[in-house]
Image 1: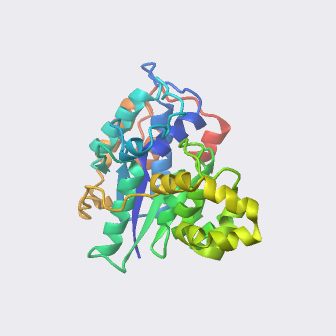
Image 2 (image 1 turned 45 degrees about the vertical axis):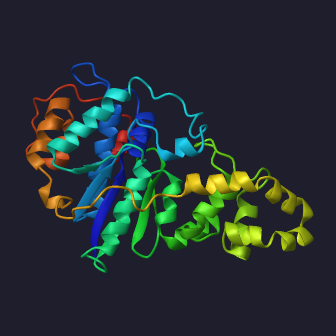
Image 3 (image 1 turned 135 degrees about the horizontal axis):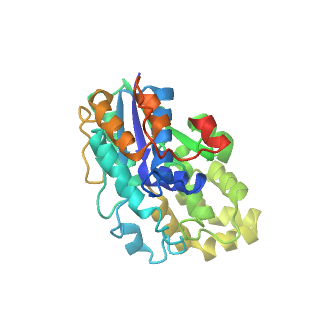
Length: 312
């Protein structure tokens, strides 16, 4: 099976920024997120050996979810000023390395990843390709199926877990396709939208397993009322919130992007372009992983903690 890697650019950038200390290069620029992003990028290439790779990013423009619910992601802290310029640095390096990038106003990276994964599986390589999503965003678990898996960092940048259908069920007690209904019931504090007040993960998975999905739960509200009047009252009271949460949690599968599988080929990766960028930033240890002749005169390499040494 050939492999397509889909990287959630913003999610990995944020994780790298918060996992590593504020490292600087020889020019005094904070580059910890850049350094961590490409450490993970190379780690994925080395471990998975994919034939294709794509990176997707969010854009600043409000998404349709913000139009549905004005409070969507409202409680998220403002992006650190030290992280903002690093987003452009990562874009520039990816472009120099000729890595395919997707970003569209009005859509999150999740939606682009969902759309591209569907296109890849349904395309000319149908039956010959597996998709591996790299993200810490559990919303993307809804995309996991026979041909789609998710590589999720657990702690820091080094400890990862691969979610397939079985692993999702072990973790949440539901099928990946039921994740949207699960989020409709429990809500999502990180995105600042409620589900049904008083319903936690265990009750949500029990209801979904018994009634299949959110629609099935509400169709059988009278039956639930007989078994558990208090639970039925909670469901009835927050029916509107559950419906909204379901819409907010669902990943779009028809965003306005088109995967050109030829442009995503790993063969197109410009190794020399990547080397030049790593040289510019002074990333000696990253250079060793892409070049057989790392240049010893490079200076300004960020100091590494023991965790980083393990990663690199």
